[in-house]
Amino acid sequence: MKHGRYPFIIGFLIVPVAIYGTFVVAAYLQAFQLSFTNWRGFSPEVNYIGFDNFTKLFQDNTFWKAIQHHALLLVFLPLLTIILALFFAFLLNVGGGSKGGRTRGVWGSKVYRVVFFFPQLLALALVAVIFSRVYSPDESGLINGLLNQVGGEPILFLADKNLALWSILAVLVWQAVGFYVVLFSAGMGSIPTEIYEAAALDGATRGTLFFKVTLPLLWNTLQVAWVYLGIAAFDAFALVNVMSVDRGGPDGATTVLGLEIFRNMQDYAQFGYASAMGVVLFFLTLTFAALTLRVTRRDAVEL
Amino acid sequence: MTNLRTDVSTPPPGTVPYPGARHSAAAAGDKREIKIFSGFAHIALAIWGLLVIAPLIWVVLASFKSNTEIFTHAPFSLPSQLSFETYKTAWTEAHIGRYFLNSVFVVAVSTTGTMVFGSMAAYVLARYKFFGNRFIYYLFVSGLAFPVFMAIVPLFLILQNLNLLNTYTGLILVYIAYSLPFTVFFMTAFFKTLPNQIAEAAVVDGASHTRLFFQVMLPMAKSGLVSITIFNIVGQWNQYLLPVAIMQGAGADEKWVLTQGIANISVSAGYQANWAALFAALTLSIVPMIIVYAFFQRQIQSGLTAGATK
Picture 1: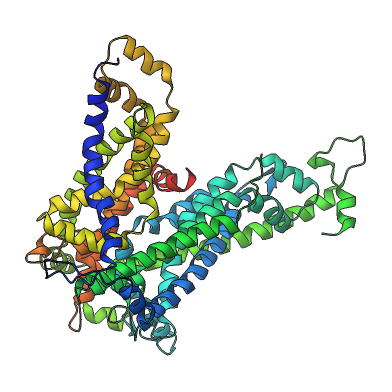
Picture 2: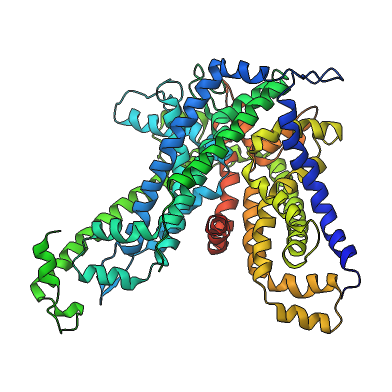
């Protein structure tokens, strides 16, 4: 068995490592390198300009706008999604009351789960196209068409500076909730029913059950959910690129870092500047993930 | 929650607590409360279910309407006639058929590649000790921490240098490369859990390393492979940023994948848009997902949530 061990190991690793090294590792390393240059893709030699890109970035209004939008998404996307998903998962799992001392889910909980989960399967780009029609400012839109039926004034979801980002946030929540309902349901399902029964016998109301039993036992799953949704809040590129009025508008009211990176690369060929934004995005994501895991750390409740 | 209530329901010492011990009056009250609660639960769940389904039904309905009908009729009114004209337009003029097949081709090749290379690397990293093992493993796993946006500029330049910009080869290689971190991470953990005895028995029987992998270990890892394959298919099928960055230039629109094609119809629709055809295009890309989901919903749900539970 010793025979042919290393040729085998090398033979199995060489292709994946080569592909990964070329397109992922090299790309991330170059991103750091490029962020210190003013390279625009034409000249053969590359000029290093130190931290100039970053100083320019911190004086860039659009950049700060994007950061503010990420901050808003970072608070509300996880918050709304997790609250809704927890609520629905709880109803699905223990909403049916107890029979013979056993807590049950509501009738038809399987069907609900299947339906809720479906948006997760649709590409965000596709969801973006659907909702840019749903939000259409005239009667051809789903919402404004309905409003028109009852004689209401049309709402300019994506053209209104104060509404645009919230409209996009709503779509993100719409898509995400089902996934977390399934995730939390699985977590709740693994909580032994005896615990619920014991608590119920002690006279615990459903509210108490939820806050004193379900929530603490689900803490780790919630933590994972928060990190995932937070990372999603740093993205939102597909939605903003497809849905927003002139890409990131109106008047920069919906722009996100991903879009700015893309714009600087595609439209202005500012490769160095775009890379600097990418580096900042990386450190933001990393800080967020580390902070979340640190702040929310608790001793897991052992069952 | 008052102390009184707790006291009442606490059984006196020495008795065995069981649900039937409560008075029948309290039980009846409980029943009614459960009924109300369960009714409330159904209403809340049904509302969200409706919110999820309504836009999709609306899209399908609108795909059969004419452009004027879309503007003048109520959103959920039935189309005045069942015509597939819009679908013809979506298929031929908006090239939905082509984009769809492009997506199928790209995802079929890249998911296969991801699974083959990912499980090969994961297997070696999980079950063989050698110099540099940990280094390579962490190199792969660290890829999970980086946002793709950070790599997008250099990636564009790398592909340009390799003459792979605007080619399927380039797109497929990039899909594979960016799917490897999670695949390797997940499959390494999976291969580690497989029992040693069977592998040892195969070795005693004279199986080579390669045969051991393909004929013994891979079949044993089937459940993990299925989950992660679904995860990769869905992820790559829905990918938008990478194709938008890579498939551009002369003649690129021939090679676009579905997400790109649909997004482009919507963005470039402009003033004289044929919304009905856009709705038909949307329907054509949603319906296959519904069919696949109907058959494999259990596997899909567990495949997609696998990432969060590991």
